[in-house]
Image (tube, rainbow, N blue to C red; front, top):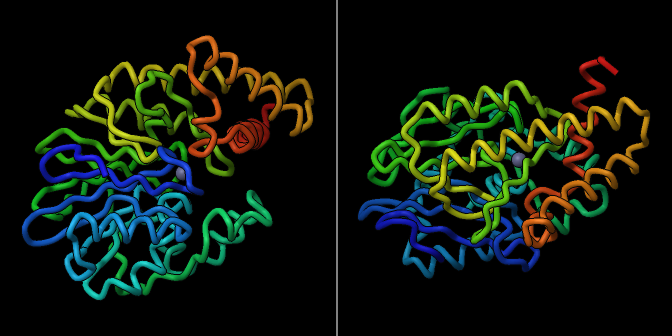
Amino acid sequence: MLKINESVQLIDLHFLGYPQAIAAYLLIDEREAALVEVGPTSTLNTLLGALEQAGVSLQRLRHLLVTHIHLDHAGALGVLMRRLPEAVCYVHPVGAPHLADPSRLIASASRLYGTLMDTLWGAVLPVPSDRIRVVHDGERIEVAGRTLVALDTPGHARHHHAYLDEASGLLFAGDIAGVRMPNTTYVRPPTPPPELDLEAWQASLAKLRALPVHQLALTHFGVFEDVSRHLDELEHRLLQWGEFTRQLVEQGLSDEQIIEAVQAYGNAEMQALGVEPSSYDLGAGYQLIAMGYARYWRKRGKL
Ligand SMILES: [Zn+2]
């Protein structure tokens, strides 16, 4: 567990046994505790162990916020809520119905992950509707002695919020600020199907730039302070990979060929910087990145 400031700690969920793949953030004051992201059910034991280590009883954990409902961020909610009698969870309006009834979410993830579903994510259970708080853009939530502002930030997914702790300038960015490993500068855009939207993503980045954000707390993985450089690099690469994949789709390449080409392109960029490509693959694998772009371009019907 890593201390970000006096009341925020990063929990490494050790997804599939690997460090620095998926984070959850624990917010504490003397009265109560909150989590931003809970991870998948497959890492629930790690999460519970970290809470115990931090001296946070399940009784004290009152608020579960998720930036979006993708299973690596929110998959454990249904299972976890059954163990937290006092807790409520906070979610984007577009995501809320899929927490109450995860059948479409599971079906959609199964199309992407197939037989690996259970190994990767574990069980996905419904969250009782009366314990779901739907949060709207700009809404302020009081949790664990601080105020978090919900920021509707589509692009990676339509059901995405970032949460800004206004007092400290710490932004819980989810996936809208990309994937970056500790001690590197390289930012990888996570662009999965089916909701990738480049224009919406750019608008979300512009929205974040206009706010007093001093630190980015990424789910994949960790806290970074070079906010404007980071966001600039992400936007540049998001569009550059967009242009690259648009041409591949235009050339009529198969899905397999597009995945291979994107992987070669991305890995060449990283190797030139001396960054280990595989360290990013659990946060944002090339297959989903390539398929997200390909679907985006085909859907736009320009090709
Ligand atoms: Zn996601």
